[in-house]
Image 1 (cartoon, rainbow, N blue to C red):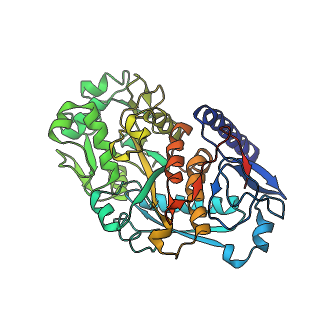
Image 2: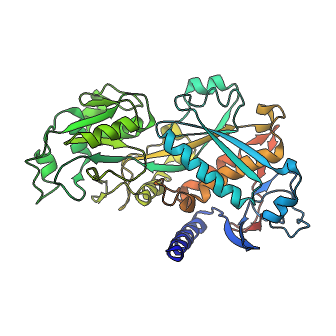
Length: 437
């Protein structure tokens, strides 16, 4: 079993690296030292004071080789001064907050191992707080959320921030239909009709024609469940409905909160999942990865290429491949990037990105309380998470960023400053050239 898991990781990494070379994205590569995994990366952290190795391209630390061998591992960490133990704190906010907090802690643990144990991440839940007051109070180093900061957030922060995507999550359309095994096929038109209240029976021709041979006539009436609070999953789901149905677009619209035409309100994801499991005939949209209850299944949704695809992480990643081609994505204008109904044979049509934000000038924002060394580790963690997400999100239900999308995160992190000067510099050299951490 273990060997098979390692093979899967290596195959995923090989596929990712092949795609990365085509887009110019540089990725970390594993290296063994005294039985511990280190990494080959391409970051130069200007202003870092930690001597960790020769570099070309992107690398950590100064360009002089480490006297202990150039690869930062557990032995080097054990001999390092106490001041080189870096503690990063993250606030987790958003509609998928409980899952994000647990996953962030796992990602932090994996990064701590990758860094040789020198970096430790503390994740604190702040559901409902958004980006303020955590960053504005300087009580955390980064915020992770499935919502973007709004204009009020940015104004209240008092300084500019850089927002980058790190992973994504497919929004599953789940249903409780007794006696129905396997995944139903649903189209955007059918789902919009359900949430508009114009389709109230599972045997409606709009649904039945997509599922020939399945007896839908004896099922309970449809009970659509929606999220009553303002959430990112509402924005992702209503964008899909508006893209699929002109009536929804004109009469209901898109956003984290809308006036739902019909259905049962649920205050959060846990309540929606509970109501769904308890209500035969119910349907709900959920952005919380995890194992489905025995009486709940997830639909396969029609995509623009004419196929029906399920809410797997790989299908969400496939959607991001084509989203990366949009003008808004290329300019990192995340508020205007559409993640609904992306083209691609295996692209899942409802994808919700997860973002992280740090101050655009880490030196000035923290007035010296965050030193350059710790700041470089902070950016390295976000870079590592985005570029390694094809492995780090494995088994957690989150979708990895494809190389074509991860390069936008890389560019955003390169733009972060420290006291007005660059903290990370992309040195010239052949694309894909590597150095040692």
